[in-house]
Length: 360
Image (tube, rainbow, N blue to C red; front, side, top):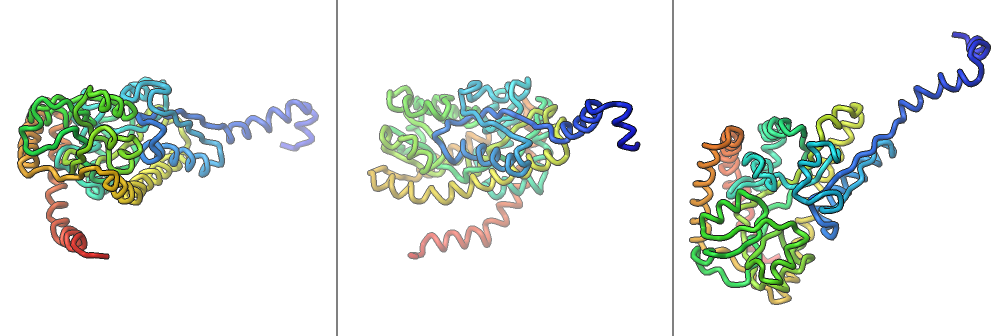
């Protein structure tokens, strides 16, 4: 249509309305909120959400923004899945095994005792059936997941007393990251406690608990655990490569443009890679500083590992019987792990074991 005709028939106001509407629609800003399960003091695990948020803002030219809120700011740290499910927030950054009570299969999206290491977890998620199977589960909660980081193999926690055998776990009140390892620990005689990261120090200091695990040297030093518990054990056999995830409300994701969906997925992948790199970069220095501060760093006795493995297998069998989702996903994970263990025992393990004996 001729521009002069439009002006003549509609006037200036009509032209402005006709021209402005498409422009406003094309530039409509998207504003999301993310509720984290983690305290702001941890630049690694909490910081990954900020890395993701900044990447989303940069790639969208500021048209898609996700504000990040620390655990407890908008909702309790363990209430974030409910928040995403009911649409109170569009997104969360959390650890799947926190929600073991909803369905045991949640734990499979993060870490199980004697499960995959970080690289194997990424391989299963990206090139096995991991992400597909987990998102089938999350869809029943109105959510979709994206990789949100990994800590690598964790330490086995801080203890007030030395662990000399499996019997030392009997009656021990221990803060643990999820219900699954709690059930395994109960099989060893321990009394598991579920406490958010920001509250662990006070519980350990006051003697409310006898032991606690979080992640590894860098975070643990920041949280000050060495000041209230002298014994630091390894490895964290229940977290060989725990994945941290972003969950997003499915309806909110569906409402995004194709461009913003791609931006979101790319930003999550960036944050996931950055988290593991941070832990690998920062843990060595923190461990040396903890040792210099008289922390006693010790391996778990062999009978602890053997007994824990046996207790874990008992719990897994029980989950197979009570959760069809667990049974299906667990079988796929273990099939994938068999080949991973076969491969890693050759080049990878031999190289690492040799280098561990070299003086550089």
